[in-house]
Each structure stands twice: as C-alpha cells, then as structure tokens.
Amino acid sequence: MNFAFDNSFHGMMEGFYAPAEAAQPSVPTLLTFNTALALQLGLTGDGTNDARLARIFSGDELAAGAEPLAFAYAGHQFGHFSSQLGDGRALLLGETLAPDGARFDIQLKGSGPTAFSRNGDGKAAIGPVLREYLVSEAMAAMGVPTTRSLAAVATGDRVQRERSHPGAVLTRVASSHIRVGTFQFFAAHFGADHVVQLSDYTINRHFPDLAEAANPHLALLDRVIGLQCELVARWMGVGFVHGVMNTDNVAISGETLDYGPCAFMDRFALNTVFSSIDANGRYAYGRQPQITHWNMARFAEAMLPAIHAVDPAGVDAAKALVDAIPERFRVIWFDRMRAKLGLGRADKADEQLIDALFGELEQHGVDFTSFFRALAQLLRGDGDMLQTLLPDAEAMAPWIADWWAQLEREAIAPLERADAMDAVNPLYIPRNHQVEAALVAAESGDMAPWTALLEVVQNPYVARAEWDAFAHPAPVDADTYRTFCGT
Ligand code: AMP
Ligand code: MG
Image (tube, rainbow, N blue to C red; front, side, top):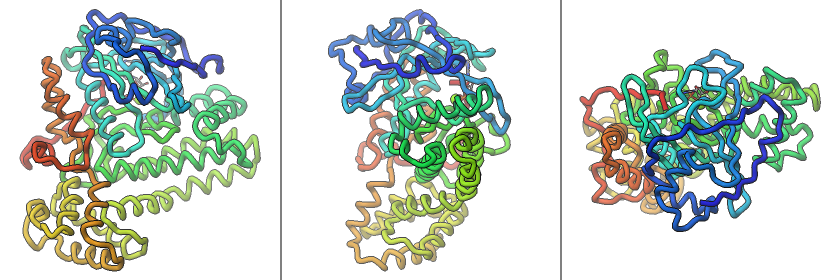
C-alpha cells in the first residue's frame, strides 16, 4: 500500500502537535477495507494482502513516508472550556495527495496513548469503530459532508470500558482535522501572530479563493459559518443527531467530525437525544442550530486577534456575521426542506408549511425518514405508505392539502416531482436497531450483518424488495435507544 504522503503540518509551530507512535497490536486482523475510497485517494498497492493491510492500518507497520503525530487542540465541552485537549486516542499518519491534487489527513483512531491521552487508554473498542465506519459511509452516500472511513482492524487486544471489549483501530480520512478547537488552542496559548498563521494555513489548504479578500480572516469566519449552517441543515434533513457538538468536534472544513454517540431519529421528536452523557439535552436534535450559533460565536472569538490585526473594523463585522446566523440557517434550512418536499420556487407560504410540518410529525409520532418517501408515493397515486405511517386516515389531512396546494403553483409532472424527491430523501438510513444488532454480531466475531447493513446504507435512495426490513423503524415498544461515547 503506497501513500503519496506530503506532510505539511510538520514544521508548523511547536506545541501544536507531539510526535506519536502506535501501540503494538497483538494480532492485527482486517475487519473491513474501503477499496472504492482507496481508489479515489490514489492509494496503490494492488495485491497488498489482508494481513499487510491489517498491519498498516493498525499502526503495526509504518507506511513509507508516514510521520505520525498527535494534534493539540482546545475546546468547549458541554459549554466548559479546556485549553489543553488533543488527540488522546488518535494519530495522524500523514497527509496524502489524491490524483486530483486534493489533500487528505490519514488518521488512525484507537491506536494507543499519545502525549494528550490524560487518563485515557488511547484505545477504541470494536463497536464504536464499526459504528463510525458505517455511519460516516452512510452520510457520504447521502451527500452529507463527512470524514470517511478507509479501514477497520481488530487489534487482538481487549479494551476495558463498562466491561471488556475486543479492541480495534479505525482509519479515518478527513480533508483536514483542523477544528474550531484548534483555533481556540492557538488563541489561548500563543497570540495574534499564531492565529494569523493558522488562519493563513487553513485558507491555503481549504479555501484558496479567500486569500484575495480584503480581510481574509473575516472571510474565513464567514465561509465557516456558511458551511456549518449547511452541514447542520443536512444533518437535520436526514434526522441525524450528532450528540457531542463540542467545539473540538467541529471541523473547519465543514465535514461531520467524530461519530461518537450519534444516531438517527426514527419517530420525529425535536428533543431527541441518544447520548447517555447528554443528560440536559444540550445537543438534542432540535437544538443543533442554536448550538452551531454558540459554537460559531466561540470560533469568532478565537479568530478576533487575526481579524483585528488586518483591520480593527473587522471586529464589528465579525459580530454582525455571528448575529446573522439564525436567519442564515433558516434560509439554508428552508432550501433543504423545499427539496425534500418537492417544492421548487421559494415563497413565504412554504416557510409556514415547513414550520408547521414538525409539530404535525411530532404530534402523530411519524417515522421521519419514511414520511418523505410516502409523500412521493402519494404523488405516484399510492397513499398506502402514508396511511401506515399515520395513526388514522384524517391525521395530517389539512397539512397534506396545504402541501398539495403549494405544489400546484408549479406545473411539474407528479411523477417527475416524485423522482426528484426520492433522489434526495433516503429510504435506507442506519436504523438504530439494525446498527445495534450488527455491532453485537461483530463483537462476537460475525461480520456478516454489519457488512450487509453497510451495503444497504451505501445505496440509500433506490428501493429494493429484498431490503424491505431495512426501511422500517424498530417496533414502537422497543427500548429507548442510548448511545455511548467511548470510541
Ligand atoms: P470526543 O468526545 O470523542 O471528541 O473526545 C474528547 C477528548 O477525549 C478528545 O481529546 C479525545 O482524544 C479524548 N479521549 C476520548 N477517549 C479517549 C481514550 N480512550 N483515551 C485517551 N483519550 C481519549
Ligand atoms: Mg473529538
């Protein structure tokens, strides 16, 4: 396996990272490898056997050109600031250049302790590793910006959590691991010069078009706010709850980062929380836009020294950008929802329709994912799917009539509209009960259910009769789903 490593972080200021070394796994065994992603990244090495892949992607064998390091960062965790966090259970192998020139971080997660592990063991259990792999690949298939998963390897070691689990290492691919917390780390420990340096690096790597702006750092703030609003609208459009939107888990690239206690909602409820550690619902489904506003205010604070260094008036402009986030999010959200509902042209009436929808879905306990597919079926003249989702024939009838009236403003053939809706509304998402069953089987050595589920969620839009079981939520009386952080 050959990487075109081109490591640009090295040589940036000291204290921003520490060299790292993977712990030796006792019996590295390949669980899964993402051949399609490897191809996209231009990783060569046809014929590299599974045993070799397992050694490379567990950190047992260092690929040529890798210069492993752990990043330092800071961050607000559940609202409380820590000035010294960092990769405590991950290391960057290096940066690789894809054939199209795009640069990616290749990171091992669960590869053992680093300088930033504090009291943690630096390890990961097989369940959370396979969960991140599955959910991130599902997100990619649904067009949600995300880090990707290249490999999962069992280490042959045990990892102690509430109980003992088999250990594993995930190989994560990100367009970079620069986070809001990275900027907070620079602002807390260094000063304006260093924030400028990080901002310049970020612009050069991710957003080269901003280099010519009058105040590039202000332009970066603006861009990152836009990407985060877009990202959260995408999450919410597929019923996704991230679960730990701490500022150290917010990637500047606008990719979803750190799949811990995340999950997808079945029956719609705004206050849905899956994470066992989010007792107050800080990161509930419906709070994700407000939290993004709060996180972007923290990002703006960290950027202020750089923004001010170019132009003191930039500080007021930054404040105005942050103040405008709720409105900016709503514009993006309405666009997303219009696409989901098959509405083309924007007007105020569809904003009311969209706002009203969520109360209706909540009141009737409707399965969020299925609902949008059922609307498309209705356009095809088939109301059965919708009827099975609703408690009685009259439920939501006035809303459906309003939606229909909105559609009729535009002369688009119903079948054409239904197809356009199905192309943006997934039928197959990682349903919690399916994910759980797949992870339980994998933990006991049977990868078949996980592999089958991965194939389904990688093809989210086109219905297949043999996948019918994957399109439904767990029975109503199923236990409340809880997720845990300890990757
Ligand atoms: P997260 O909530 O997953 O973003 O993790 C928050 C912080 O805790 C990060 O800095 C992680 O590197 C660190 N951390 C989490 N689990 C471990 C572990 N098992 N060993 C060491 N550090 C960890
Ligand atoms: Mg994290």
